[in-house]
Length: 415
Image (cartoon, one colour):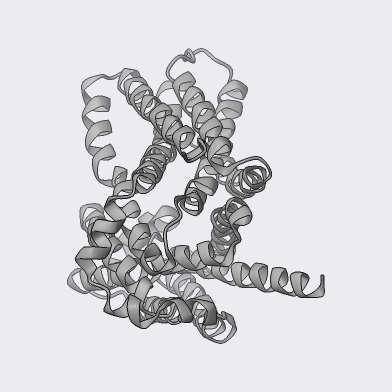
């Protein structure tokens, strides 16, 4: 009993450290979510230039997903994570000097490598290996929900610090933004050595055997691509991520079509963010209690139907109805996010190629970041009055049902 409790404590303490690392490493890259206008002012760049930086980040993520899986299968995840945190922090110090636009492109490109190539697959693989087969749901639910909680707490401190400095000197936007960057850098510099010292990946090191390091990449790739479960897992994630990505458009949709003020919409969307720890963690535990794939299938159906409802709610509806619907969709989509990586546990992928499998699934699963903006923009422009949004939501909801069917197939007993 003592041995079991000790092992359980070790697993959860390591998971907590990975959650903090995952929650701390990305906010610097997406600082524009809370400080876009301040960044434009402080760096003397245009909105288009800032979007080019973000686009470079997205492209590098797509390019590095598969190589990141290959790295995770051949090197210690603890070392990869620690290096990623340190590299992101050092680039953040350069970022804090408010460099030129050309330097910003280099920084964002290097951030893409540090958080995509050496961090992404490594941290997912480490969580998958930490959890027993009957704990995959809760571990990945805690990972996504906990990461959201860490990001929300850090953002709260950052905004409070920013507001305090501006209250002392209204024209000190550059200085206030600099202090925010320093805050995030400081957290990374603290977490990086903690990850290196406290994470124990000795079990993983034994899996990085001579056979693994000498295995041929093409053979490993064929092995992963030949597994039906990997494709079903990828379909679950790409459909689930589409549902989540569609919620990014809620702010503009509510403001333009339901006569809600920018402040009211801001309150609604911020409240939705707090559904992440609730939905992700709750879905993870329920998934382990019942069955991760079955619960994911149900959540995908409910999330799809709820998103479809957005297309049929009349513009004359009370604000309270929209608040309830948005929060419900947020709860369900974050529940989906908390569970969809747990399907990897049912794919029976050997540890020596698990990182590569994660990389391939990620390329497919997060591809909506590339094509959904290309789908939604012309729909919204060509079908005004909210019709474009409604068509967009119905298309995504239909895809969500496809993901539910894929999760159902994964849940069926293997013959």
